[in-house]
Amino acid sequence: MNRDGERGKVLLSVTGFDPAAWHDALKQAAPQRDIVLRADKAGDPDITYAVVWKQPPGVLRDLPNLRAVFSIGAGVDHIFSGDEVPDVPIVRVVADDLTERMSEYVVWQVLDHHRKGPLYREQQSKTIWHEVRMQPAAKEVSVGILGLGTLGRDAANKLRMLGFKVAGWSRTPKQMEGVQTYAGRSGLDEFLAVSDVVVCLLPLTQETHGILSASFFEKMKRHGALGAPVLINAGRGGLQVETDIIEALDAGRLGAVTLDVFQTEPLPADSSLWRHPNITITPHCAATSDPRALVPPMVAQMDAHDAGKPLVNLVDREAGY
Ligand code: NDP
Image 1 (cartoon, helix red, strand yellow):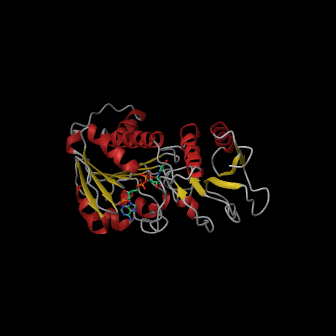
Image 2 (cartoon, rainbow, N blue to C red):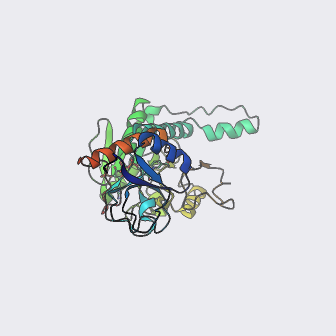
Image 3 (cartoon, rainbow, N blue to C red):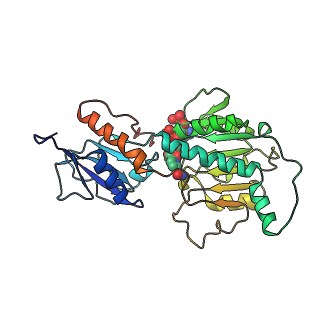
């Protein structure tokens, strides 16, 4: 803080989001901080924090007094995919608002597949009245969640409350009441063998890139409670190999798929994913970052850090999430 009680500037760079909404929320939560959309000069010594989403190349360069970078989302692959990221702590979003939105999405999509939403919508479009008699109960269906982090754990608990059997897969071993847990590459086959529906809530890292591919679909549970395995990906598009998804659907190795995220976003109009009858598409909306909910705790962290307290929800650079 300087003599006038002003705090360092915050650099705001949020490609794809409305900067005005983030600017207003930052100004309201941090009236003593100047919020700037770009550095006035190279090496601006007054910028102490950056709040970013897909920052353009060079935006974080030459900021000698930068103390931390805040991602406006839970994922941070967008930060690393640009150019070199300065060697300061990176803070990601961990917030009930975001977590609850994601669990809503997961529950919505799991229930939609479980209760044959796509089939009944198609029947309605053709005025067909036909009840599928073999509707399994939730307790007969196992939902496997890839990623038992902040989002995966909450979704797992909410699915359990609905009566589903729930399994989870993580990098390091985890224990969760009522959830069958598996870890590491060695645990993946077993996890896939028990999961009728696989929900992907993994971060995109070097290790997880392209994990949702032909060899993965090959190992998914056949002839389960829903007839054929269902995949829901709300993690990141880079986790999936889209040509392999279409091939697996056409070969019957996958029964149905929901995708919220894509290798290229927005999904190009000529992508065959749009037109596949067994694919449900949503436009990366599973859990949006709402500045009204996310900015106040971000600013509280900046203030606490300036007062000498440690930052929380830090990204492990080596692991990439
Ligand atoms: P967390 O960091 O809290 O959790 C990540 C989980 O993935 C952890 O359980 C971690 O294992 C596991 N994991 C990471 N790498 C591997 C690996 N190589 N093998 C097995 N498991 C692995 O993240 P969040 O739950 O907060 O968020 C997850 C992702 O959701 C984000 O990274 C983002 O990409 C996506 N997201 C999508 C949104 C959307 O709107 N579509 C919105 C928000 C987030 P371990 O527990 O051992 O560390």
